[in-house]
Image 1 (cartoon, rainbow, N blue to C red):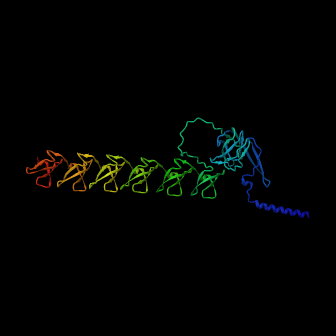
Image 2 (cartoon, rainbow, N blue to C red):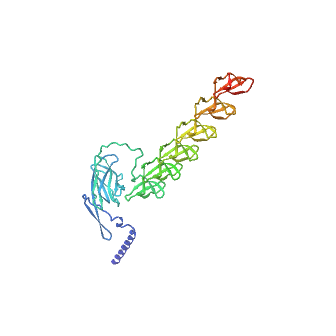
Image 3 (cartoon, helix red, strand yellow):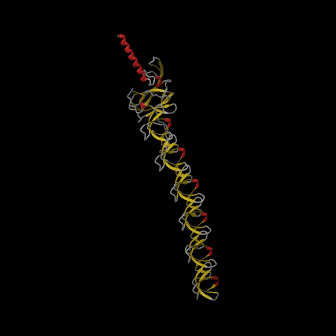
Length: 530
């Protein structure tokens, strides 16, 4: 009876053992999690090593060596928000864990950052805004679970009493961590330097918790770093997505205020065959810019080298200046709206709604005068078949003038060398002068409207609505006397015809009313006697 009972119990235990083995068969073994479990060890002297023996279920032994090193961080100050003290390892090692102990006064550990041998930085989560350490209290990092070697440790700490000290212990499986702590900062006299321009300081590219970052997998996404892991990954939250993403730090670009010459808020030109002007809304450390263009709801992500900053001037052409552009057959006048450092300018041409973009070297600037012709000058233009009167509205550096001619709604563009300006008088002729013109077939009396620098006069002849343009040398100016014949004199022609002089002109003619005749006659004064 007893033998049957024992056999039954053994069979039951065997079945339970088999079932338990089935349940845990998919769990990682000791070798899968980095060499076995670790057990607390008694404190060791600096440079001592510890041997830990782990026994597996198969009764075999695995031996793991641990090396401990410690260093004292002295004179931790009460500076608000703490000061950073750096601990340098003589040789970069992988660290399994570390402990920080407060001495002399209470201490607040704000953050601890491990500087890896490859230059990356890794925050120790357990120390981020940790509780205040009482005197002789210890704060542990726990298992760092970090496979990369550590070259240095930065501790940002703040004393909550007098001057405090920290005792820092680090454990490695590669060798004894031989550490040197940075001493307290000592103020040194320096020559003051001018502060950088606001908003133009280039920041570090190192990604930290809370940073805005750019992730590009063919499309561009901007998110916020929520957590950084010692494995070189980060947890990032993207707007519009309910779940966070775990991404490699190397695939993230930190948002900064400035990089090189480009900063947030700069106006830039993007030219892909068409031209677009927008404003940089974000700058990323990988050289990508987020740009918002007017008329587009979504921002664009563009490499910095494809963007050109706005400037006050491009060459000698500046914002607000009037310019002229010739395409070889026509002229276009406009105003410079914006200039860019690559020499391009945006222009609003008169009569056109759209903005045009041209190289400043193709433009001529406006100026006050060219030769003796200035803006607002009254001018005459003779194209060989007719004379045209107008006023200069603009003059450009190549000597071209923009003119509004009388009777025409459009503007004309003519070189100033082909224009003649109005003057106050020429050889005694001026506006209002009464003149006589003899073209060989008849006599014409009129009034001078304007005279020009080349000796031409514009005249309104009696009985004609149009103006005539005649050189003053071909005109006779009305005068009181010519030679000995004066207005009002009684004269006789050829000793036979008597009459009264009504007008005398400087070209040698007199207008005479002969007795017995109703018409007035123009007579050469050399044929008259008093």
